[in-house]
Length: 175
Image (tube, rainbow, N blue to C red; front, side):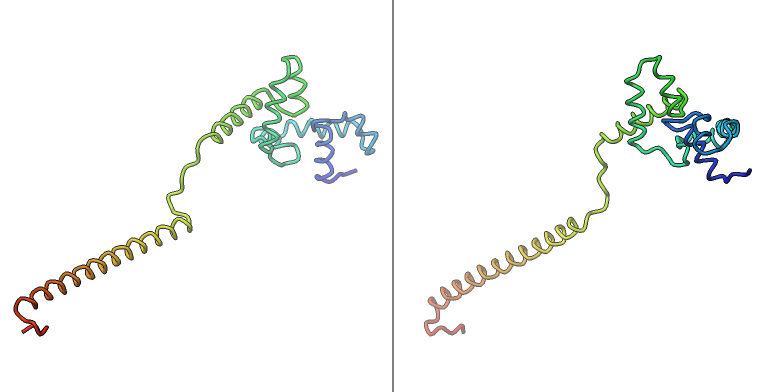
């Protein structure tokens, strides 16, 4: 009997997953011969695609490990004794080198996350509006200061002319 690729992958995932079942147990559940299930699992572990998935950190289902999953693996592994670590790695489908790479990746991500964020070179719309309003305010303050200076000067000119008019001209004309 021929089985679809999707069915095969599902059976392999059930055997190779974190709580993987033995081929004999799965055989009784799904009705596929135990030797067939074992062969599928063996072929999956030996295929170049499976090796690439492990190298890239992908899980058996074809997805990538989440950041939370990576941290969980590293933390769980750190809490285990040397004798327990082997079983843990087998359950998770990892090699010791994979765990070392995960530790480095998690460490690097943690350090990067603690660094202060770089400021954007561009200004936010609010910052642009503030700058525009500040420029407008400065321009208006200068215009107001100029108008005030002109008023003061006008007052002084009028006072000067009023004084000049008192000395030579009493009728208020400027001739």
